[in-house]
Length: 240
Image 1 (tube, rainbow, N blue to C red):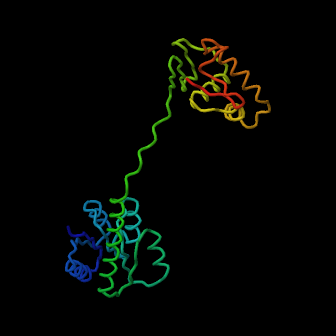
Image 2: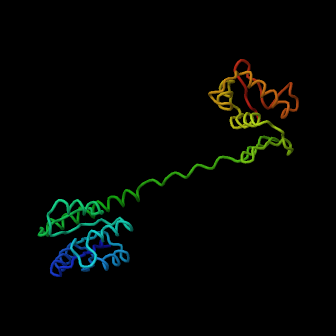
Image 3: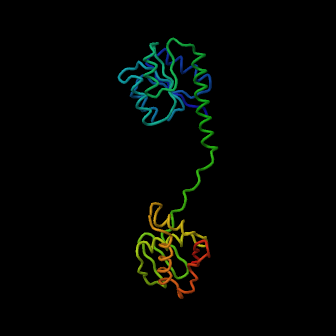
């Protein structure tokens, strides 16, 4: 399919010359001589490139380019009769991709058009060949279930055999941390830092006391625990 180029030029002779030469290169060309209709055509046809004169009746090329940039990323080659640096700067600031001063070589214009369209094709190919983004990670589980023990993270509630457990805030935090690391050996220092915070001034005996309280609430035989087991000389492991 031929690439589409919109030529926006109010000087009829130059407009026809541009259209003729671009069509000879195999492009599909549409023309207009004012900024308002240029915006309407661009929105309707979505051209691959726009050749845009600066000096247009009604709405000048700078304003046309500024409006276009708010709505689409179509590359724009601006044409102007002035060679002032400030004009080139303004053109680039409003979103033009390239800039040519009249009079210009038709061969050079065709070369720039070809180069701009080649860059567009390369970008499109990169996008189409890019690997799809990985799926978003699943949301964290809001309920943790281990056998007959259930933790509801949203409500900060624990239930055993479907009966609510009365836990102090730190008891719940400790039980949740253990449940989230089921099967892992967790040292007292790790538990203290993760549950109480690194700036807690107490010692590791705090962990032992809270473990004992938890066992009394969730173990069938707190003296012979099977859910929260002691790893001798190291810490604790939650078995679920």
